[in-house]
Length: 154
Image 1 (tube, rainbow, N blue to C red):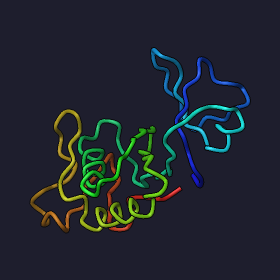
Image 2 (tube, helix red, strand yellow; image 1 turned 120 degrees about the vertical axis):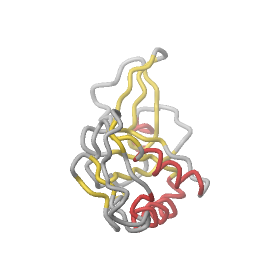
Image 3 (cartoon, rainbow, N blue to C red; image 1 turned 90 degrees about the vertical axis):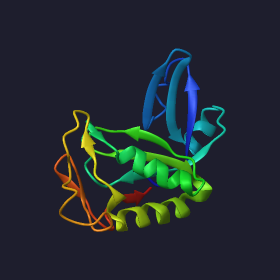
Image 4 (cartoon, one colour; image 1 turned 135 degrees about the horizontal axis):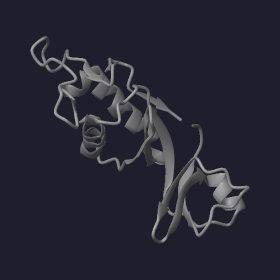
């Protein structure tokens, strides 16, 4: 999704506020909205993010994808808020560091994720014996993470 995104909290989502994501918390409803929509509605925010969608279909029971992605971004000193969708994971990173985050994710995909992923039950999603770590493609729910196929900036 192109643009700038922010997290806001409301007691109840206004009908005319198009939320891109919503989480009900004990303190209220957390929404991810465009910065412009937050400003129109007079909602305070303190973090302006770019939205990056991982292009691989990630299985909901896969173990390791979030850790690999957030770990690579953490090594570069880039904060990352992860939203899991049914088919894709989405990252909200500091807007001013979006280009740098994309470069980190591109390097990660070129390395083939650097390890195998497992389902929550421990079932292997990639065969560690068929290639070196740098050459390996990690299967996630029937899809492969291949070089150049990890992220799409929005």
